[in-house]
Length: 200
Image (cartoon, rainbow, N blue to C red; front, side):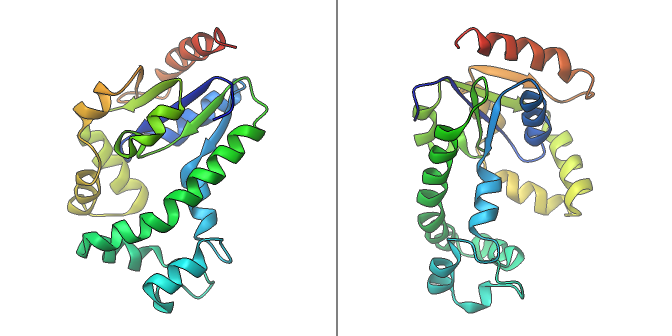
């Protein structure tokens, strides 16, 4: 990791990570989003696609040559070893691309948006502070159902693959409460942005 101040931003599905990352970007932070990197790697002509198709078969590509996310999601939920096989392909590529983007970043400080930061373990050693976006589980479920059109049991199945809220909070250096209004986020983001700038 480059010799500069790095914040790892994480939170459960539906917690509002992207919204809050954008708020920090507006204040001068450089955001490196591992979800966006993963989507690029698995998109049409993505760097990971040859390995994914070699491992899982041509049926895992959609008509555009991207990974068929619905088929892959179904497979990894049905067969847990498939998830590990996919991660063995993607995680090293995501790590390398994330570190390269962080090294090139020009903002006041770097914020790595990593949904599975706590689960992965390794990322925690690469950041100076862990920022957890928190909200009640019922709020997560409602947001994801509204955003993705998934049934409640599907959302809870995804949440079950992530660490419990208590474990995520225990790993936090800093916490933003996103269980209320967008307006309530502004003072929290302003306070932490000022705090992170002290390290520059």
